[in-house]
Length: 164
Image 1 (cartoon, rainbow, N blue to C red):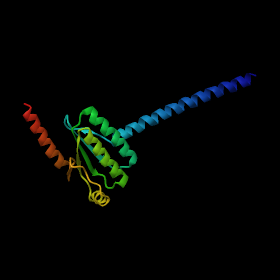
Image 2: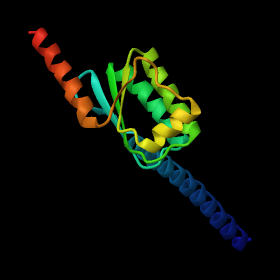
Image 3: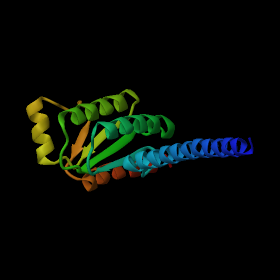
Image 4: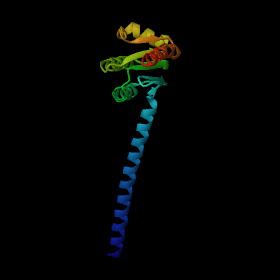
């Protein structure tokens, strides 16, 4: 009888311990995943209306989904008017990723945010051309991030001067 009570108590303790540990572990994994997602799509403000999104490494469908969500949220929250999307750190993109990227650019345009593309590599451009993908007429492209910044910072300086 006493042995059965001890066994039931130990069973209850172990059951509660493992359920709580599992809940804690799941919450920890979720918070780490959110941190990684935010770090994989860093939107960097360089003025009140201009932000840069530098992409480095592999861009897959999961990352473009994160990018879509974050870009559209940040455009609304920060009132971004120009988003400079720097792709110089991306060596290759598959067809689905390119298509999704173009949809993100279109979505940004719907929110009155102009997208500037920099750093497209020859391999990616070649793939886009052969697949018939084209940027919209409002999308600017530059060979490098520096070229885009030079143009848009000079526009920003003109806006500041005209407001004073």
